[in-house]
Structures are given as structure tokens and as C-alpha cells.
Length: 267
Image 1 (tube, rainbow, N blue to C red):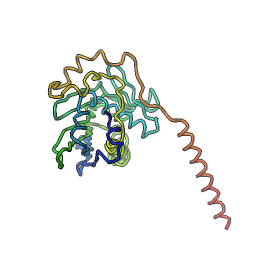
Image 2: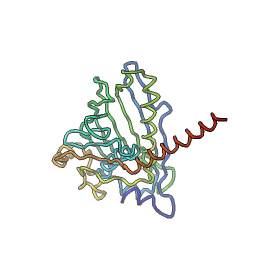
Image 3: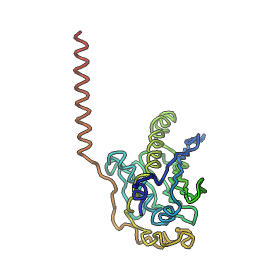
Image 4: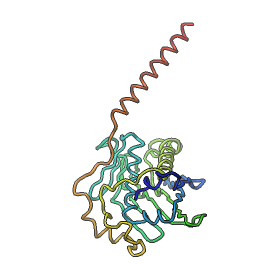
């Protein structure tokens, strides 16, 4: 059962509340950035048990990348290969961020997927950070309800833009965009279907497999490396009709404003 099916009913089943720390993004003296955005998602305990599995953790990771592509109208895409994940602008050679293959961990109360940052246009050479989605089961306020705390963390990230220009410029541009997009992703968990994994590494680890018996999936991930894509897979596509429509609308708006300015000047 997907989250979308859980939400589409006569009554609201899940509730998402942003719970990011007050200082959600900080930069140390050396220029390293740590940014945390988080939310609580509450739903019936039985429904939470249904989606608490390695398979759904992998699908949650896939949903993050898919959301990033959708919110940018497909201009930003993610390329999956055997050893890495690349966030690209339309396509190569514009690789914004390049990560190693994801690392997974899961127990009965916690699931983690982590991508270690390698390089990219947005990355300073000294970067050794990571992007991580951390999901924890936490006590709910109401009987019969389940709650998870979903946290998206970027740690030890050295942005190239802060080196090229200034830290202030980074905080006002790239950092703000990241926070807005991540909060949007977290809110979407209340009504967006978990995407099917592009790799399907843990397809055999569905709800019928108890996370308590599965334990950490790190070992399973290494054992299932043959499930990595043999060829590069690109996730995301640009809806050119929508882009064209927006471009036409922008041109039409510009033309109308131009006529209005000319009429005003003639007075």
C-alpha cells in the first residue's frame, strides 16, 4: 500500500507537520555547511506497519529525487549508475552534484539512506560530506496512531558558490532554495505516492518481512549489488509543453506590461 492510497479516503489519515530546528542551516568557520529539515508524519499504526520495510525506505529515497525533478519541471534530473548517483541540469556535462551509491540501514524503529557527496559544479574540491534521510518511529499522542520523524540532513558540505562568491550569497540563494524544496518534499509525504524504485534493490523485502528480523540492511545491500542497474538510468524528464506554456505566458505578460508602460509615458 502506498502513501497516496492511505491519504485518499473520506477522512484525512495522515498529518504532516514541519519540525525543523530553529537554526536549520549553519556554516562553520571552515565553510562546512550542516542543514537539517524535518517533519513529523502521523497516521494509523496499522498503516505505518504496512509501509515500514526496506522496500519502502528505498522507495522513499526514490520519491525524494523524483520530487526534486518535478519541482524543477524536469530541468534537474538524477542519473543512476552502478556506483553513483548524479544530479544533472538537463544532462551531462552539467553535473551539479555527484554522490556515491546509497547506503541503507534499517531496524524495527529506524531507517536511514545515505548518499556520500563526491563532487560536482556546486561542490568545493575539499568536500567530504553526505546527504541523508533518517526516518524514526516515535511515540504518537493518540492511541492507535503511529508517528515517524523524517529528517533530511546535509552535513560537511562545502559549497562552491560560497568559495567563488561569498557565504552571504550562498545563504541567500542556494541555501534558501534547498530549504524550500526540502520542506516541500516533507509536506508532500502526506499526499504523494511513494515512487517505485528505479533499482528495486529491496523489492524482496516488503511488508511481510519484519524489520526486526531483517536487522540492518547494510549487509543485504552489499549482497544485492548485482541488483544495481547494469546501464545508466535517468530519472526525470522535462515537460516541454508546460515550459513552452510558461514561456508564452511570460512573453504575453511582458508585452502587456510594455504596452501599459508606453501608454503611461504618452500621458
